[in-house]
Image (cartoon, rainbow, N blue to C red; front, side, top):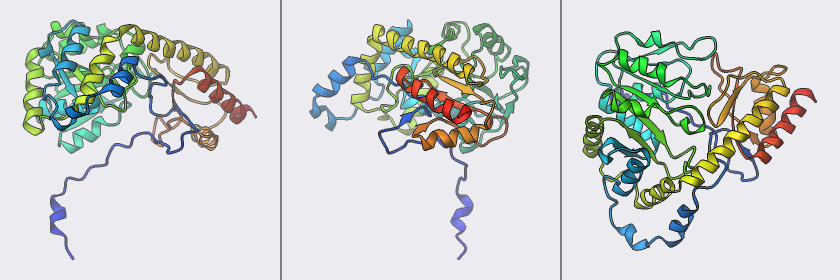
Length: 353
């Protein structure tokens, strides 16, 4: 039978996230999750939440959360867009701003969801190669384009680019929207957020999934000039007004308000990351200097695939891609000090045993 309806199906190769093992007695270092719990007030809200609120629709504009984010970053609420994880925010931004016939630009080694969104929305795109040291060449982004996006620090490399370099790119592209995906910025480097007051074509995107330990609640947000945010809300409210549930909105606002817990948790991860760099160097791994909550490391004596497979046998999960350029690397999330020491003991056995 000829299923002619299939001729009109939108076919794409989907994004493949890191494995989520069903077992609980594993060391999970493959999806860059925070190893520490969310702010204590989040637990208190979950324990005392008024269940009668569940029968009501959530506020479409997520006002409590939006206001908390705006206050935290010194912005107007009209400069903040909230979505169900930064993936939702970036997807909405693609749909809103990348609509020309010119190609959108992003690096060839970067977050592998960008080309998926481009394919889903039929957006033309070009990838630009990273330099040998895995940094971005700003000259590659000073050409005709329909928009630009890249993470800072980059993923999966963890390499951080300076605010000055980012401003150079934004300034050179006044006719297109430049999106900087700052999912990992809290772990090192300086946010380019202050530039949104200077450039109306810059959108800065962040998430609660990493530094605020709330990957399971799915909270992402974008910050930019009021006009950019209004355009995104117009598209969002044309599709689905009630995208973020009430519990998530309230818990997210509580997490934002606990600045001390946020700072303390981030610092613990930074300290463990720096400790892990030393241990990996001692084991012969090569890696760019990471400013994120993961390390993109290449083993010297064994193949990355072999090390990945052997770690998995020992119930330790890291990330490996069977793709050109990156197949010699493992992306290792920073866990607790205890988890990392168990990883290093396993690596010593695998590589030198």
